[in-house]
Length: 296
Image (cartoon, rainbow, N blue to C red; front, side, top):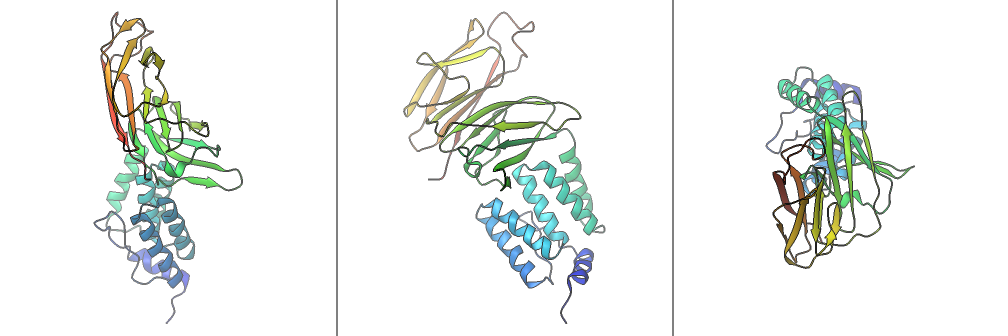
């Protein structure tokens, strides 16, 4: 007997599959053929790292049959990709479709974690020079999205964006692609939904990037200011001069490799702002250095 869409939705509502070892749910036992095919394509795309394609296939499967497994996997994919607002939407949809699911408490805990202590900042670009599919996104020196992260795309405006979870306060946001880079600051306050628009030149070469997360700091390499951007340095170890306002700090050694990666350095302080009663010396500085590897 052929099962219609409405009946199938009721069937999967009662028997939502458990979460597998990979963090996702398997397709329902009984699934409309086209929906099952789209679901399988989503899993395959996710496995090979194409999260944007995976999300599109999940959307197709969900439009054909609104199964809770599909809603959960969309939320889980969004959570991994940093799309907080959409993850909340999809997990909430899952709970509505599977109100008696065995993992309800776990999903409710995920929702609480996503909603507490962070705000979804809409980070977007309309610049054709910024290829978000190949981008690293870093917030305060930590990688929050890697190349291949799912992004929203508006085909009519060419607006491409992510929702990035950030706690209230001021945050430094950097975007690096194989060809260019962008830098900005996000001011996150209670009761707002901040937006950040990024633009970038068509090409910014260089295997090193320095980002500053505190006022008053200045880094120089061979008398060239490198305090907020990408620059070309040959492979090897390079001495960076570090100043905190008028105070000279200990230099920092930056290592650049010859393998096509970008050495990313984020510098901040543990002692607050310089221009509101800071100490009369170089503050205690924190250097976070990492390699960003792009696929050839």
